[in-house]
Structures are given as C-alpha cells and as structure tokens.
Image 1 (cartoon, rainbow, N blue to C red):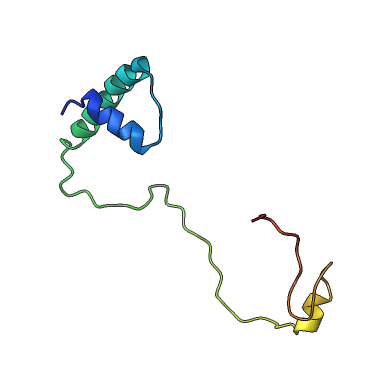
Image 2 (tube, one colour):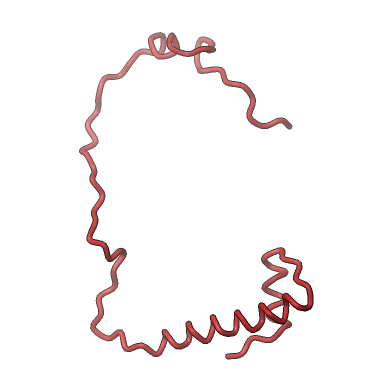
Length: 96
C-alpha cells in the first residue's frame, strides 16, 4: 500500500507538524517504507505462538497490602512547614 503525499500531509496536520515540500517528499518515502515493513510482518506465520506481555521473565515484586499505623491529623500536620487546621499549605504551582 503506497502512501500518497496527501495522506502524509493529513498525518502531519493531525500531528501539528508543518512540513516543507522537501520534508513532505522525504517523509512520504520514509513512511511508505515503514508501512511496507509492517505489512511484511503481517505475512509471518504466527500460528501456535502464544501471546506474551513481556519476554524477559521478570516479575513485579509486590508486598501484601497490610494496614499500618494511622497517625492523627495533629501529628501529621505538626511536621509541615506550613499548615492550617486541616491541610498542608503549599505555594501555588499554576497561576490563573
């Protein structure tokens, strides 16, 4: 399936990319090769191959979710640099 320059221009617009004429020509050729490679992968016989999520054999090390000590609000807020009666006070991160 050959990609046209119009299709690549559309893809570039969706990606908010402004391509020059030279870049458009180059990207059309490069994307056409990529699509051709993906089509080639579709021809590989995968019958009998089990799907896998990862191939390294590593597993996540997880601990049991066991409730721990619950501190009262006064103790927790007592460690804060700035706090009111109910919450930590922090500087604004975003100005409106």
